[in-house]
Length: 436
Image (cartoon, helix red, strand yellow):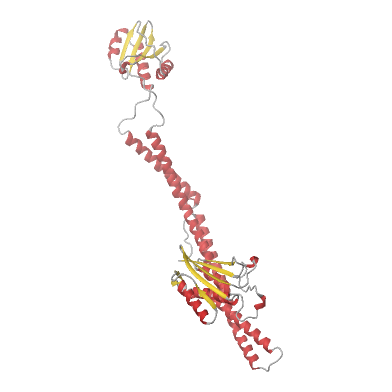
C-alpha cells in the first residue's frame, strides 16, 4: 500500500480523495451556517396538499357531530375550513393552483373529490386561494394563502456550494499537478544546465516513485558522462604533454645537425607540431578550468586589447561605450576577445571592435575588411582544427582552435556567438552577446 501511494497515480488519487472529503465537510458546514435551527419549509404545493388530505381523511373517519370542533381547530397553512352545501366558486386559475389541484386529485382517498383549486380575485392574501373537495352531499371549502410558486433549484446556497466544490477541487487538482510537475521541471532544468556545464549539483531524488527513479537515472548518467569526459580530457592532455619531450628532442637534433635538403622543411614541421601540441594543451586546460567569476569591465578590456595591437603597428581601433560590466571569468573572457581580434587581424587589415549594452546583455562586435566566408561554411569554422584557408596551413599558430575556444568560453558564460559576412560584402563580423 505504501508503495502504491508513493507512485504518481497513487498520490493523485490520494489528493483527489482528500479534496473531495474536505469539500464535503465544508459543504455540510455551509448548510449548517445557512440553516442553523430548522430545515426550510417544504416547497409548494406539498405542505398545503398534505394539510388538505389530512383534514379530509380526518373528517371521513369521525362522526358528523365532531365536524365543527375539527374544522375550528387550526390547520396551518389553511386559514379557513367549512362544510357547505353550495359554496361560492372562484373562477381564476394559475399555474400554482393547477399544480396543487393535480397533487390533491392524485393523493385523495378513493371516493373523495374531485378537488378544485381556484384563485379568488379581490380576496385578502391570506385567503386568496380556494380549495373545494366534494364529501358526499357537502363540499369542504378551504382557504389558504396565495399560492407560492415552487422554489427555484438554483438557489444561492446550492450554487454557492457547487461553486465552492468546483473551486476546491480545481485548487487541489492544480496543487497536485504542480507537485508532480515540479520534480519534472527540476529534472529538465538540470538536464539543460548539464548541457552547458558538467559541474552541476546532483538532482534531488524526491517526488513520486517514477520521478525518483528518473532523477536517480539522470544522476548516474551525469556522473558517468562527467567521469568519461574528464578521463578523456586527462588522457589527451597527458598525451599532448608527453609529446612535447620527443618534439623538443627532435628540434634540438635538427638544429644541431648538418643542413640538408629536407632540413628546413623538417624543422618547420616540428615547430608546427609544437604549436599544435601547445594549442591542444591550452584548449584542454580551458575546458577543465574552474576560474571564479567576478565583475569585469568588458569595454575597458576590449579597448586595452585594441590599444596593444595598435601599438604593435596593426590597424585596430575600439569604437564602443566607455563602460560595460559583466560578471564573468576574467582570464577566459580576455583570451576569447584576444583570439577574436587576433583572428580578425590575421585575415584582414582594418579591424574595428565595438561594445554596447543591450538590455540585460552586452553586445560585442569585431569586424575586419578581409575576405568573406562561404555561407555554407559559416557553421563549420567554430569546430576544432577546422581552417577554411588551406593556403595558411604553414602559418605558425594556425591550428584551427581559436574560434573553438571562443565558442566554448561564450557558451560557458551563457552567451551567444554569431559569425556573419558584412552586408557590404567586404569582410566578416563576429558578434558576441554576454549576459550582464
